[in-house]
Each structure stands twice: as C-alpha cells, then as structure tokens.
Image (tube, rainbow, N blue to C red; front, side, top):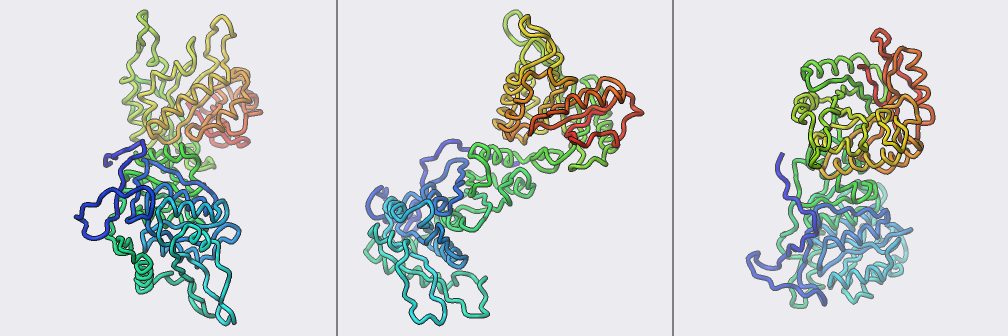
Length: 534
C-alpha cells in the first residue's frame, strides 16, 4: 500500500492558474478588488461539505476551494430548483471555464451570492437560465435573481440559456458541445477585455491529488462542478457508505490523495467522515468483505497462548461451517483469545508489569486475522476498572478486526461496592477508549462483548443504549453466558436478553454438553450477533 502524504491542518499553499506562459513569474494577487487570475486553495486533509441545501452546498464549495476567480457561473435554486437541463448546463459551464458554480435561492439569498462574487473578485458572471419554450409568442421573461445578484456585485453578465427542446428531441445530449464551449469562452473573453489576463485562455494548472467523494443527488451538481473546475477528481459513493463499498475502499486506498473532500449529507459527521477516509486509506477489510461488522453472525471458539494457532483457526472455521445456516449475513469464524494473564499488574515502582508478554498472544491473533477471522481478546474484571484492564492490550487492539470480551461478574469487591458488578458508566468509559483506538488508528469498527448471567451485573444497564447510539466505531454486545445444560442455558438467555436496550446486540453461548449444540437451538428473538460454541 503506498504511503500517504498526510496533512491534518489547513495548508496555506495555493495553486495559481496562470495566464500566458507557464514559466512566467506572477506576483501575488491582492485579496480585494477585481481578480486578475484564478487562485484555488488546497483543502485540508479531509473536508466534508454536508449541507442538504443545494445553494448552501455550492457556496461552501466555492468558499473552501476558490480563493480568487475572475469568473463565476450562477443559476437559480431553492423552491425553484432549476430543472435538469439548467443544472447540467450550469455545471458544464463552470467546468469548462474553471470557475465556481453558485446558486441563488434556498439558504442563500441574492445578497449572499453578491458577497461571494465580491470575495472572489469576480468580473464576469455567467448566468444560466432556461430557454423559452418553442412556439411562445413572447420569449421575454423577468430577469432572474441570479442576474440581479451579479449586477448587484457590479460584475458583467453573460447570459447562457438552455436550448429549447423540440418535440421528439433527446434531453440527454451533452449540455455543451466543443463549439459551444469555445463560443462561451469567447464571450467571456470579450466581457473581460479590459487589459487583464483572461482565465478562459489560461493553461490548465489546477489542484492535484485532491479526491472528491460524492453521493450525487439532484441539486449537488453545482458543488461537484466547482470541485472539478478546481482540478479535483470525483468518485461516487452510493449512499455515502464508504465502509460498506469494497470498490470505494480500494479506490481510496490506491489513490492515497493529499486531500479528500466529501460532498453531501449522507457521509455522517465531519469526524466520522475523516475516520472512514483514514480507514479506507489503510485498505484493510474485515472478514465481512467490507469495513463494516454488519450484517454478519459471529461464531466463536476459544484459544490460549499455549494452543497451536493453526489448530484453533481450523476449529473456528469448522464451528462457523456448522452454523452456516444462520440468517443475517455471512457467518464469520471468530477466535476468543484468553488475554487476562497478559494484562498484568502495577509493580511496586508504579510501572506496569505484564504477567505474560503480549508477544505470546500475537501468533494466535495474527493466525486468526491472516485466515480472515475476527478476534476477541478475553479480559476479566479484577480490582481495576475495565478500561485499566484493557489498556495494556492496545498494541493488539490497534489491529483491524480485533475486539474485546469483558466479564463484569468477575469484578472483585473494592470494599465499597459488592463483587460481581460494574456500572454502565464504567462500560461507557471502556467503549469510548476503544472508540479512540479505532478512530486514531484508522481502523474499521470493532466489537465489545459483555458476558452476563444476570442483567444486574451491569448497574443501570438500560444506559447502555445511549452508549451504543453514541458511536459508529464500536458495536456493543451483551452475551448470555454459558452455565451448564440446555435448560439452564435457556433460563439465562431469557434473563439476559429480556429488556436489552435498543442498539445493543445480543450474544448467545450454547449449552456446555457438545451434543446439545446445533444451529436449531440458536435463538431468533432477538437473533444473537455472537454465538459461542466453546
């Protein structure tokens, strides 16, 4: 995988679209007054343009990418969102001229567009409007708000109308032919004929290594065209689901762009978008074939540091095959690695002492991951908090496809609270810690499993729903622990699964006697995300 030239702060570098020979030295452009050339700003490492309003989305794209531009392309929006022909022509004109595309309407008034034209130093606005219908006696129409905004900014207006479509004509033709593009550039040149350089004849020096991820929807054409006009290369992400699309992950990984811009409200928050991009750039998939844990069912077997890794991996694969009839996605072999002994303790000098080095766990962890299996590090709950028990395992958790399994009922009393229980706040703390490991290392989501034989072992368990809803990086599972035969197993399942908070998945451990274990015994209401068979 190629290395990424990462930037995590807004760069001050600008790329200048020069007029004349590329080798000419150009003095810095003043930040006010008419623009003499186009200046585009290199965006930060990840930028999300997420407004659902087309005009606001277009304005934000212009503000983020264009520092200066003598030309802008403007059309109407809002409740009067222009039809497809106008939107296509608007975008095509902006790309052809290497200029930002702006919309008047919706969340952006004509004054807002005028202010943006002033900031850009625009001297010409190409105003796109629908052409008259064939056969109309009077083709005249009131001046659109786009033209009013341009004139209010004191810029020259060049009008561009969509062609009138005759009956039987094809509405899907290219919005601008080569001849029409040249005619538009000539008209813009004429409007700019004041002795200053013309952007329409400038060489195509633009931003490089900027990737725009888009979930195209009607109204987003202007923002996407603005990015293309500046030199960004766009790639579609259906539904904004980067993690669920292996083709998108492969593309982001192979491109390793200097900056990635997301367009549209379906990519989640800015923080989630940055994390999803970082994970895609790392390029590693989970056993589901995507960077999502779901949909899938996980069937686990146990292994320890002294076990033969190959034998454990084979056992996990065989267990998954046995339960291949489970519904809800692919059945993923899962290895539960006994890791409590590796957690260690605090020594007399205050330094952490590992009772067993993590290196002893690595062969089994790596063997499972190499075989396309998921890994859960099994950690008990002693006198320390759950987070303190888990933190020494961070080197292993910083690998894709590794989660943790916790046992609240192992908690010993600290003299203040009774043994065998932890608080929901303590669970939330360890989930937030693991969430940080996932996002900081650019990992796909992982899993935190809580084993219970009784719901009271997590005090205020109903609060776990809030914990689960607060993160996309961790799937929280409450697993009914195995305690014996079939009847006892069913009783424990009923207690633990009843009243499970929304957003928290169920896990089920089959009865201890092997002859009881079969796919027909796995509960279906709720259907467990995790099935433990050994």
